Image 1 (cartoon, rainbow, N blue to C red):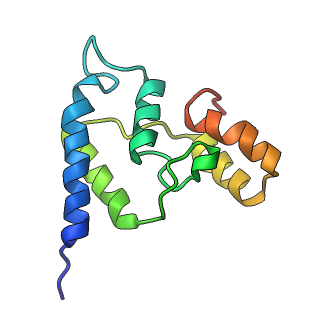
Image 2: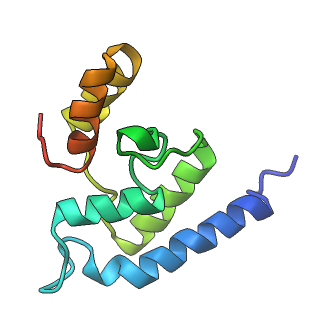
Length: 121
């Protein structure tokens, strides 16, 4: 049985590494020129490394769920000591609940600001 990631995933890994090299020095906590955590979160969302499967119309990246890509992101960020982005009750609990059960008005009002750290629950 071949348990290697395969070419598609290795190409994805190279993209994550390139992002980490290009932006890692500005990650929150990496010195005097580091970004604010909210700016880091916005950058991660824009590249699909945070809020990966949240639809774009609600402020996420809009990718299909892929556990291997999520794992690759985590591996590469951990290897360089980069923060994974914001998490917590709002992002981890409220956003999925709104996506499943919220009204369209609630989704549009709360999901994007919550993902970007503008609203903390």
